[in-house]
Structures are given as structure tokens and as C-alpha cells.
Length: 85
Image (cartoon, rainbow, N blue to C red):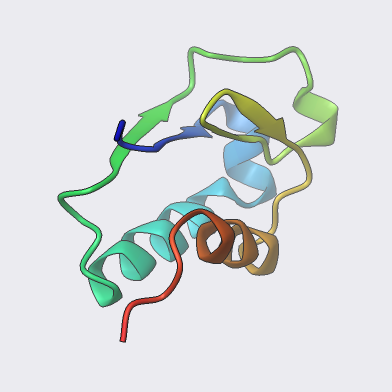
């Protein structure tokens, strides 16, 4: 099974709108649920989708999500990687 890939845009607009906090949410979730070795997380500001006004933007396995606040980020992570007991 391929590792899921999470791309968090670090462009100035997405970063200012909340992706700085989304990075923390992802890192904490992966650590708390022992997924650190199972997920490739790429932090990139070069993969702009031309949707800066709709940010913060996150791409998970090639699917773009816009207006991702920390609560939405956590929901997406729980769908992709269910919490481990």
C-alpha cells in the first residue's frame, strides 16, 4: 500500500491564513497515533494551485482542499488515518 501524501502549502497567503497551525496539527496527530513512519508529509510553497484567495490549501493524495482550518485538518486526518488506540 502506498503511503498517503499530505502537501501543505507554505505560500505567504496560505501560511498567513492558517497553514502554520495546520502543520502543528498534522505533526501532533501523526506523533500521537504513531503514524510518523507511515505517512510522507511534504511541506511546500511551490505547488500553488492558483487558489490563494481560497486558502489555506492542503492537498491530500492529489485532492485539493481549501479553507482548511485546524478543525477541518483534524477531520481530514481522522478520515485518512483513523486514530490508533
